[in-house]
Image (cartoon, rainbow, N blue to C red; front, side, top):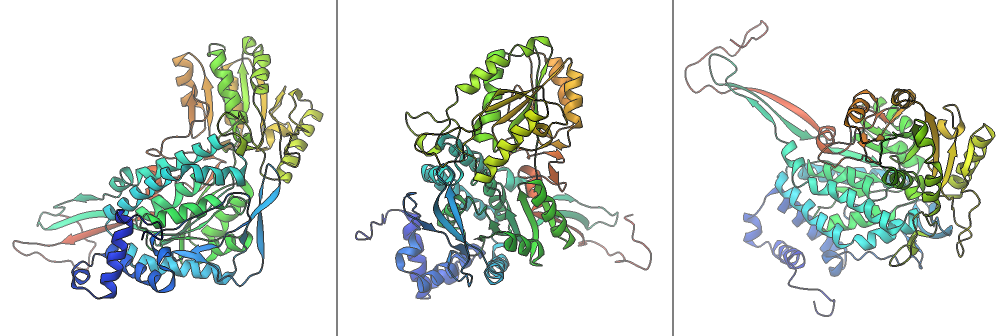
Length: 574
């Protein structure tokens, strides 16, 4: 242990060694302790003892210093899988430089089937592990996420481009979901019972939730930690096994999370990570072993996955695009509102599905706020997110790809050609030392109409479209006429105006003096209308509902007297 820098006081190190030794020796203590989790973990440890070097059993060191090229593998059955028969790889670039920093395999059908088979095999035992034991693993996982926060953040920033502070926010919002797996998720699994439903006595009716089996998740590039953590922790806590496909543009965080949850005690095969593009997506939609799919991403991909997945009888929840409106009333706190709008519109370079992309200014007074909004946006620094640590002040990182940058700038140009006024132009920005990066600065357009390109497209860039109206009713009507319903907000000092807005606006998530109203995971993420395909939402009680099925049992155990057990007519409870 000393030679290998192993701390033998750590029970996460010592206990697996003891269990593996006793199991190999067929010690009686193992024979007496055969709960499902212990059996599963013992088999997992013995397999790793045979296949891998001893230190590989104990811990997994995941390193990426962003200077050396990293080759990611699939993570299948508790280990990095290099069984792919394909020579095709996908390059991962740093958006601030467009330098290649890593690669992932383009998984073959054989790779993908191996992942599903591993998950199906693990489900045979995992579904019977008591939920409190599964929750303890998630508790340890939450601790490891916190411990490795800085490492996760640097991975996210290197591959996604967002600032380190924003990357940590990405992690924390995902961590909050993991924390519910030790509390509200467990209680949400409780069933219902109605006793003595017949006069004869002895007949009860009760229902309880069961896991579905193998489920899958397909993730976007913009939240490399949070979105996977919306998915597999809840799914696994309620008893499913999982196949996760992270974005091929930002795979590092998902890979590190897979290592961490494995170190927390998740048995082999319960979580499997595969990489790829169309082949992997189509396989997940078609594989008969996969019972449900969670997806977050763009409209075209989301609708395709929903259609293809449901055509094979799968449950599919797909969060799609958004066009989030903020309504600003004259009685709002001017300074606080302007700061909130600028942060929500331009933070993460606008690459959030809950970013404010439309500001509706109500009344003559708010039209005078434009110079202050421009000034607030000009204060934001554009740069490499990795330079945002310590005393360095970087507020906005790059867009994810050169194509995303070009599309964003093209829409700005088209919007101006269609009559919008360019109040602040973020096109053509160059960051010293990162001339090859995908940077677009904060951009503000005014006099935007609802048929303007900046309004009709989800730009996914740091672009704010401004509309002026005379009344709150007009602002609500514009918001409701937009096909999306992910989020919206109102800024006001009037409780009556806020209450009118929240009741009349047809959007699933509403902020009142809150720019990005993403709910805590004790609730659910309730985007609506064109922002979702499917009718069951992510995390919270609805997340548990999505990953489980309800079984109802009517039982007849009479302990006094006797009554007929049934006949040819429809049974009634008398």
